[in-house]
View: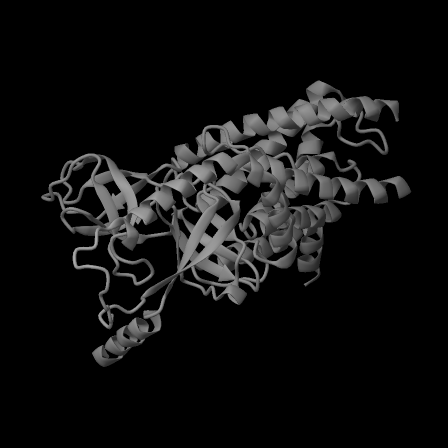
Amino acid sequence: MIKNIITYPFQFVLFVLLQVLILNNIQLGGTINPFLYILFILWLPIETNKALVMGIAFVLGLSIDVFTDTMGMHASACVFLAFARPFMLNILAPRDGYELNVSPTAGALGWFWFIRYAAIGIFLHHFFLFFVEVFRFTEFFDTMGRVLASSVFSLLLISLAQFFTSNTEEKR
Amino acid sequence: MRNLIAFIRKYSFFFLFLGVETIAFYLIIKNNHFQGSSFLNSTNQLTGGIYTRYAELGDYLHLKEVNDALSDENKRLRENQIRSFERLFGENILVKDTIFKRKYLYTKAKVINNSTHRQNNYLTLNIGSRNGIENGMGVVGPNGVVGVVKNVSDHYASVVSVLHREAKISVKLKNSSYFGSMQWDGEDYRTVMLKDIPNHVQMNEGDTVVTSGFSSIFPEGLNAAVIKTFHVPEGENFYEIKMQLLNDFKQISYVYVLKNNFSSEIKELESGREESND
């Protein structure tokens, strides 16, 4: 528990800085932008209080917004992800439920489980974010294309991040 | 009443979601006002400071392009200097100039944050109200229009880029003076659309489009873009024109902020006109 109090804020700052300083400068084909920082929300321990996750998501989104001048956009998308997270965990739950004190990582629950979990989370977040950004449904397929393209790229990056950290997870 | 409380308690998580989402959307809508100023944005001390450090790191990587652009600009300016003109009437001439009065003042600025991939793009500059920057001033790059200042703090300024879905800049065709508005369609950061040009106007691919000077933000005749493709959609009265921007927005690193010395006079005059209409 004490370890968590130190590691999570550290992780939070790391994810925000990584996103605004490095990843926001990466654009494939002009408009495709990966969002790695939502991994912070995805990685929170399963039994974390739902309301607390929502609060953390709001603050995380707002931190990104402050840097990118998109006041409220990332915050709303993150809150939406936090709202969907319990349902995602419910749908994907193993037959005999989750073990206690488990974080939703590939190391703890397997790669197949993690990829499905991350893919759903990323898609919901990106869908919300991109539609709030354009704020209209008239260019639906245009926006949808950007949602899907960015989702694939984000999933790739998130899997990569998971791959590089999963070794240390298992040793613990 | 008890049922209501039970209902709220049962769906408390959903109501929490609605509540937080409402706050988020309040922030979005409040900050969507084009000239609305806000407290939390990339012009504040913390984020501005971090971006300044970071931009300093990245500077070295772009030195070559920046040097090229600067030397091109120097060449143009030198060509226009008095020294590059031959004197026709001997050494000593007295010029007392009361015909010209300075209208636009340029302030040099460095771009410390920039984006091109979003639907509404902004730039952050390293100068602010202490350098005399105010909301609504125009920003130009080495090759023409860049945007309009939206927010100013003491040391930083936030600029609405031409690549913003709501940004409209009044421009005209250089050779025929027909005017229209320049807007971005959110697709490619190198191309913008030109609207409101009637279908009888003659034009060619490669024609230059310059600022109209109507808005008093930009002087007349400043380069904006070059016509790339144009056609009249069936049954329409106006052209659909795609233009190539002259600035490379991905590489932009030094810009100039324009102060119009007559802007208050123009505004006063125009607001008086509205009152007299009432």
